[in-house]
Length: 258
Length: 258
Image 1 (tube, rainbow over the protein chains, first blue to last red):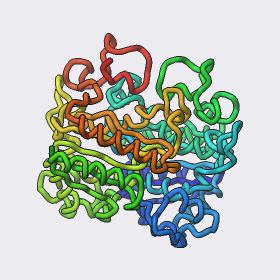
Image 2: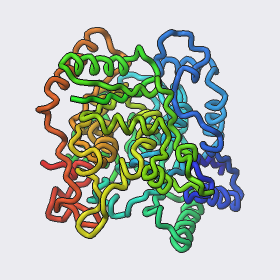
Image 3: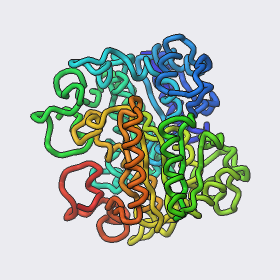
Image 4: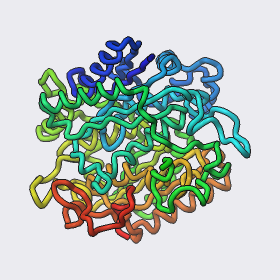
């Protein structure tokens, strides 16, 4: 495998960083090639702004338009191009981050916003009456796998089906479905650790074991069965699930095959 | 009213920025006081790192712990303190941003991560067998209102109950419930605009009218009826909705009163 691990934690001695390093070692020990994008180590620039589009000479920055033009004319900034190269190189992407405010840290969100440019992460493929872009099951990263590893401060029950924070699957849906599946990845079930502030040696050992098992069994792990956009389940261009498909209940789970 | 508008868009001439300015003018025209935090204008630093805790002298950065100590010892950085002052001053908070990758832009996420520090945004109140911190209906910002104004590139149907992106209410749940309600705000229903890249004068006029109406009727607008954490609906400390409460279906909507 060719693995890209994207790490988003400011402390090298953190649980999060340790897991990223353990993932790297485990992959390498089974002969895989690994690249790590340590976003804090890279001094990653998070904020999308005019500097991202050096050849944009319009007075008014239209972000999607500028991103499209810069992607087409190969004038994206070097840091972005480097990350895109890694994404195109890999067959497996790991995002490793602490769950801050029920989502990814700003630095990782900024990595997505800048690296998944128009023509790479979105705005791919034709839009017509039978096909609404290469997305949600198609796209630049089709054929690659992605997996989230995240650490939450709260208890597992707080993130359960009836837990107050909302189910972890739903909290991660905007990432797993909205970013990773959208751009073509097959998304593996996440590895989530809870009560990350109360970890001791024993809980770290257990978690390490889980992570190793996930890596060893990665090729046989079934991705989350999100429904594909352009293969009959959704109306086009409204992109609503056809009335005969899925339960009548609401929520994100409607978009997963039973 | 005392209104804080937090704006997250790199272009002053954008639809997003225009809406923020229109909100400001509308509030002011009815005699309200308004402060604007234009995050790009401020050059907001998004990434939580060691520099945020100048008095932290531990070799290893434990983010929550460092945040708690810095909040208690009044040693948070000046930019963070300024934003906290504005939040404590206001009675109404508007977050105005483009919906990028189904969430807030990195710069705004970084504002939350740095400004909602331990002791202000989280880690407030006692934790015991009947009360699990002042959060989800209690907290520092209790008694204040908050509202999201966001602009999505996709179509409204794509964000409908059966739309492929997932329902907009659910996509915004980690923000509305997980950030705003968590820290005490009463959260008003969001104002969402769609197909933001195809706006013309007429659609801008319609949206402007909607925004003005929302501001004029703000005091009478009922907040989203999220269930309060410490008032009998949830078990403590597991924080699961009691079995007799709510429907058996899953998803975020379980946490809203019918």
